[in-house]
Amino acid sequence: MIPREILEKPYQPYGDSPTIKSYTLWSLYDEYYRELARGGIGVGGDSPVPDGYDVVIAGTRFVSDKINASRTRPLGIINPGASKPLQIHYHLLGKAYRLNLSNTNIRIASTIPDQKSFTPQHLVINASGKTSILLDVIGGFSRSLRSLVVEVNVEKNSLLDLVIINRDTKYAPSYIVVGVRGEDYSTIKTTYYTRPGPMTRLEIKNLLDGRGAEAYTRGIAVSRNNERLDNIVDLINRGADTYSHHLFTALLRESSIIAQRGTGKITVSAVNAGVEYYSEGLIQSPNALFIGQPRLEIDTGNVRIAKHAAHNTHILPEQVFYLETRGIDKMRAELMITEGFLLRRIISRYAMEIIKPLIVGELRKIINP
Image 1 (cartoon, rainbow, N blue to C red):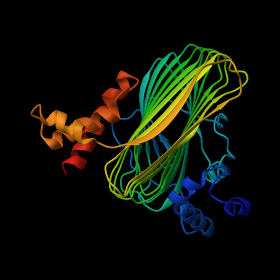
Image 2 (cartoon, rainbow, N blue to C red):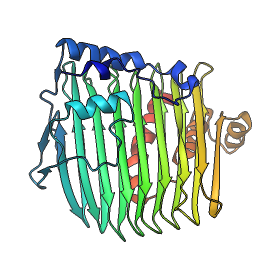
Image 3 (cartoon, one colour):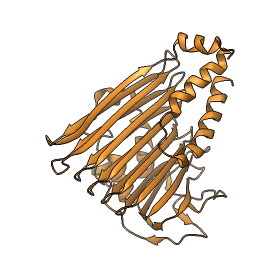
């Protein structure tokens, strides 16, 4: 089913940091691939179809009574040969669905089977005008390995507000890739929140091909126990006068591990472009580990701005003391500090309305279980 030359490739992509390799459980993915090659598990399977969504990718099925989808080929925003999981995804991909959206607000859910399987899902979206999309990646208690690729093309003079909620299953790894391409004078606002599983790889790629296009990416992660996240965000400025900005904040507790990395790139053709890339982890356990590795690649001397930074931080005693002197108890003070760290500079009202209640509820369960 899967060619031997693909199965025998190492999971670790060329050029990946040895540090990342040391802390990422690639073996969980390979266990599924080997079992799939032996015929021990299948591809896809029946999945639940939740209420309240305009579109549901249930297993490998497309379900919607509001929006028509056509069968299509991938857009090419995501390179099929970029990694071993993507090569397997494209090799086994039987169905890709296309949505054409204009001046609309839709809710999309991705669900996977409960039984152990490999589930590739591929969605292509053309967005024009002012479009808001909620992509809800639902894990539940599934033991299926999800391979989800979403490609979005934002047309000229359009605004995309994309919110991604990834609540992963605690019983299986997942591989999620979202690629967004902006044409002339488009604006892309991507906000993503993830609660990882035993091994979650979440990639986001913004391609600014059009002149004057802008992309603002805001990532938030909350992890605990032995959860692991490998988050890669690449900002590629290829059009003149483009601008990209990325901010990632993460809360780590117990023995969790988060690696957040990626490239802010300005190509030769992107004159007067700018890129900013920031990655921050709030560590609340001596056993937790945050690895921030943003980098810049600048191929032209005509640059508007180019900045990047990464750091770990903790809740400082003086922060808690300051709030306690104003009548706030310690537990509430820690909750307020953590909430402020995670939620600052959310880039759209739409994202704040969706993500803030999730994070506040999650924090209350963690800090006051």
